[in-house]
Image (cartoon, rainbow, N blue to C red; front, top):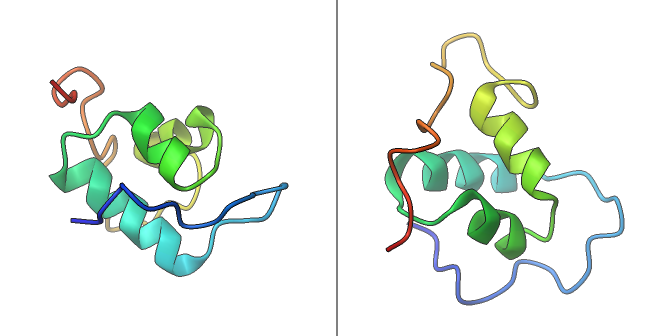
Length: 77
């Protein structure tokens, strides 16, 4: 699991996510209880970007099942 206490970047400014960031985001969606907003804040991107990755609308792969996380099943308590 990625430590979300330290930001990946200080600013985003419409920079595309790197391959490593996409992998880490998908791991967080699958294995953590961090909210989609928390993950978006950590990677300095919009919540909709994380939601689209979760749903397979962005950065999808044929062999992956979507949604990665049921939107109501994992929330940070």
